[in-house]
Length: 409
Ligand SMILES: Cc1ncc(COP(=O)(O)O)c(C=O)c1O
Image (tube, rainbow, N blue to C red; front, top):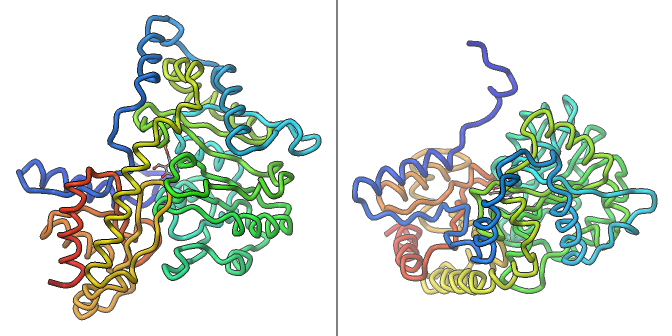
């Protein structure tokens, strides 16, 4: 069978491979600390679950939804966006109308957007470390990912000079992901203000703002965005959000796309011919759900993430590795930099490579029972993503194991 060249370009997920190994080792009775989680291991809000239950009494919950989603839910999504980001979409840009499309998760929103915007050879600027799926989605849509490198010494914040250096006449899209997976931080407001000014110089570029972790900040100030400084940029900005992270509902597959009607209309056309509307039952429950409850639900979860972040900082400083620590503030990840720890020397002495993150994570899993996601997956050599969601006790134990490894004991 001859496969399409588009699909041949997609890389296999290292995360899934390591996760499968971790699961297999756990099934064999080995003690495994799995810090690879990309989801919150908590039950969603009972108010939301009850609504799903009660909506399951209606036949409409089991039938096709309108392609773009139920109008009541789309309105609610727009209203919630306007309230939380302090934006009025009716007056934001003269002559531009906005709309929302409900899709089957944030991933689906992103592939819809990229599929509707990318022409063969278009370049899409990604800030490394980037979320694993961006480059693969871009390649599948016929685009070329172009990477802006960052440094752990700048807490992985891209320099705007470097961003500008990578812009060419082929640059079609820039993806901004704040709060960020895998760094667990959000860009500061002055960075967003400067980024807005930079974008004004390049009127052809579309900006995708992936805000799937928006409500999950556990240190103030809350995330802010470039378009809050320059609302006229909303005319070429598309926002991605959803319930996967903020309602701990990755399996329900609901994502939101908010953008200019010019784009949402074609996304609607694409969605209508590919997946149809998203899950009716969950949409109907969400249409009745009070979105103002989300921060209330997240409060104890954020406290937990803050505590684990603090424990991590303490563990590193207690082991003379305080220089590796930066303050995570949002989402639920931390990107650990091995290149500044003693263990890297052992790997360097074995072979000359630029990136040992996969070998390091393999050894960590096989010999120490600790599962992390290698930085290779995020375009960030000699790092690994650790999730901060584990319960306090096992998280501390996992850190003990990790410190031993980092110090080369
Ligand atoms: C940055 C980022 N964007 C989008 C998504 C996709 O979310 P969903 O599970 O709703 O498809 C994820 C999921 O991990 C993510 O981390």
